[in-house]
Length: 527
Image (cartoon, rainbow, N blue to C red; front, side, top):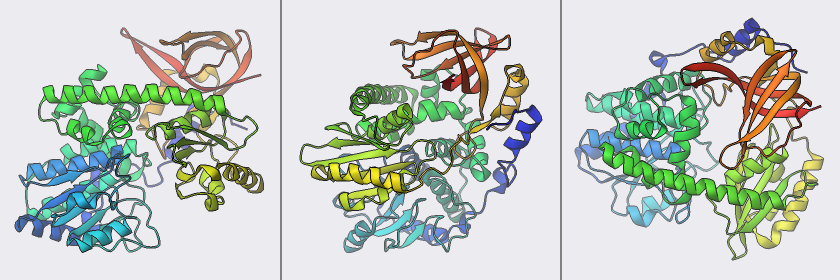
């Protein structure tokens, strides 16, 4: 199924991911290639000249938080007072909504970042209150779009911006660049690129074309950053420099935890800290949120796993007042554990179930659930992740319909893991391999870290590690060659001496001045 791999073959395979070549910042399209960018820019300049009240409306995920932060920092830099709001996930719901309008009455010009393209009703309310509205968003357009002064969204048909997959913070950055030109002012756009790189990684944009260029430039800027928030994070992480993995696995979850557990405004306040002392205190609050998030997630994951019906093709579990901020993460964990799509629902004790679903591998969960709309109150998402709500008394009918849909349709696009690039023998694992892999960094969506499979490997050692024994440390052997390995977040038990196929990525482990190679194990298939 998987071809044996040589280094030249791997080099060709990774190179072929970049059809447009390796772009740099000089290849960035001009701001005016966005539909309505010039129109929006003129209106904002007019608002500044007329001293109008401007309000920025963001979103509670990392992209929304960084987009809001970018706009806040820009207006501070030009010394123009604005107000900003990030909706509370629990009280307000998503983005520009009817719940937000009473808080922005008196605003002359409202600007959304990373949201608004679906806010048809809220846009009408803005018009009734004489609030002019500019929407900047990157999500897909529904058949009906909001009526407003300008819409900057690369997914509009009439938009000439050449890249469809960019995030909200990139559009905010472009708006700042356009305003800089229109106002004829000198500001350092690279200091804004730092935050853009965080959003591109966190929002899982494909790390190709201009996204790769912006991430590389942003990470280079982050590593020279004078922002107190970045300095505080490096200090906390005990690191001298950051890479894409540090952002994806450590910084992004911290920023996300504020919106998941309490209010995303705390993440904006951290990113805009003006001195290291404030930054440390605000980071400490985010660390507390994240620790609470991890504990809550672990507790609900245990309860969810205990409920799973192993005969279901689509797992559905529900619990009393499970924390809405973590149900998506729990769904992903259960899906990975059982290798099946999973939907996790929280019962608000008033007969309403709200939750999230996550797919597994290439299963189209959106397609399966789409045929169950008659049982749902709200539903949205894409093939890999969904959000939904329903009445409790619809649950059993919904579960039955799911199984019928699954059985009737072909919802699996691929049977093999597309990220496994080929079969590798232990004799081919070397520093030349890791040097080649590094050449195509940063890895992420659209440019996944290459995974390898090694077959007929003997398990010499499998010891637990971590505070609660939640990780495993391995020694593997293949034809006399021994390799160390680590697998995180697993409770599996492996018999020493057994043979297996191992799926992994290769990592350089730096410890006390020594550098060794180790396998970051994703899956072990025991023979």
